Length: 147
Image (cartoon, rainbow, N blue to C red; front, side, top):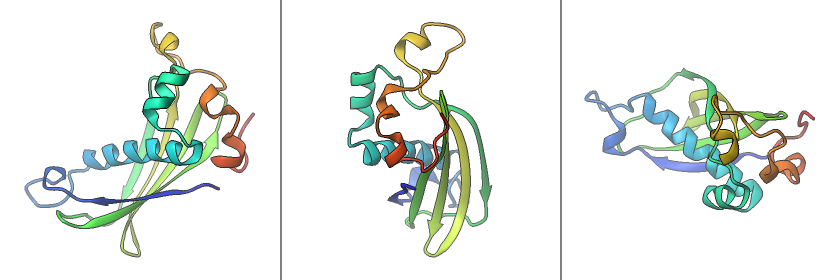
């Protein structure tokens, strides 16, 4: 299974008055980590995916997180991201934020990949068999993708 890892330095703007990361900032970090995963696995960045395939991004449908250790200003953490399920029009992502050797956060997300055409309709609909990953998803992202 493909796992993308990236280091993040906790900035002043990520923190609350207590000096620890304000929890919504983690979800912004995870959003960036999802885009980095696709970029590393497919060899093209999110901007190129949007332009070439007409997708609008990777909107989140559902998320959950278990917070076990706080992160503080100036620390460097590592985020491990992987796809755990690829379905017809959505996929699941798992993130693990590490402080040294300890897991500080375990998070999961369900995301979709709508196209510009799908966004014009209400409610927004995802694109079945999203073209950006169809060809390479089996070998790059997930060992047992759903059909």
